[in-house]
Length: 567
Image 1 (cartoon, rainbow, N blue to C red):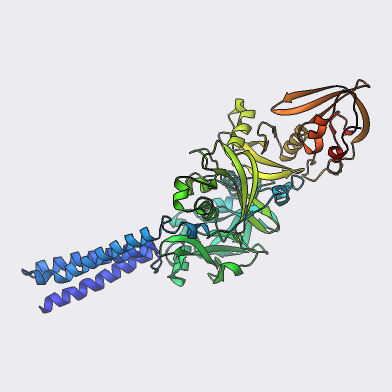
Image 2: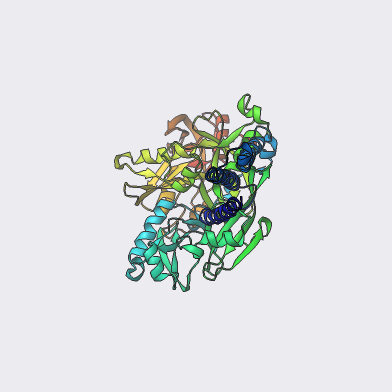
């Protein structure tokens, strides 16, 4: 009897040590909202029960009562597992559809161009995908002989807003465990910045190396360092960011499940880690400093918007009548070039827009019976979770990518996921086209509402200018990316009085143009349906018009034409 008690004590202590070691390896949250915590609890009880059965067998146990402790432990494990499954079912959207829908508040706005970066300030366009950024970063670090032999560039590029401009940043990492032991005293010496607008990379060397990083081992492993300080926090991913002075930080969103134990994931705060000193600060979600850009990552924002769009009318409405249901546009498998977002969120992809010092996620919205078109767009703030919906019908992102690729199909270029910009008041997709090796070869601009209007060029400024000319306007930006004031102010328009001798409607690249032959035998043209130009339908042969004409003979009708009619 005494030997049996000793065996139980030794077995329990050994199991406790093994469970703690497994916890240090897998690092689940000590929190009932973490499913891995339940798995640990159930697994521990089952293993204890099995070991107890072994002890009883070796001790010569014959009666059922001898195996009662093992049976109780296994029964408890089975009971906890059953309760966990029931709680998971009770947390599902089937029973809480409208609560899921209310986790994100969506505001509907009208003019999306007011909230988009202007083509005249190309430095604010976050155009580069992670794959292209990684290639530029690897090329930059490859030129630094004293660094490249010991370190690699981490593939965990973060999209941030740094001094009001988009920037992709990534820390270096140890090139294996041997390099870690050789260099752990000095730490990680710096990080890489990549400008999506300038298409170049820089290496920033730190005065003191970063010790607490994802590529470190043991207690210097970043995730383990944070977990030991915050054992109950629900953590899922991190972001590498810079403060206003360029100092590096790793930020960890801290989650909570707002519906029962396992449903309705949301962010309640952020842990900011100084990787040099290891110091950590916790901020509530509403109190994070402005330099922290990612509180809500793009995948979570997309999930929450889909909950709002699908379940505001209830769960069964989303299955049957589908009244008012909408969701984020999904890309076909393998179509996205920015693998992080697409692979992690079931084919949903998104781009970034930098406004001021905030990063906004943008993506198209479609109805459930989508036919490759959007019913609008959303912009979602990664720091505040503000979400704006803009109803504007047009091509979805995949159609725009296909249109850009088709323009240069002889080269076999692949389009990256586009960004969305304002080109002189016209919402426009802009993207890069890459060759098989991932190098950027061309830029493409595609009209959102009429995706057969496509312009391509070797530089971003030239692409925007060609696109603007397709819209019947002049150049918008010069080679430096600055606005062309002559075009913006439209100083080259000449007022003309013309008497209509002949008028015809002609389809050009999917658009309707109105051609007028004047009594002076001059030919004038205008795009039908643009601005006041649809009022041309009021005019007939013999009428006299007051118009403003550019050097190419393209004219606009004055806004008061609708009231005055033809002269």
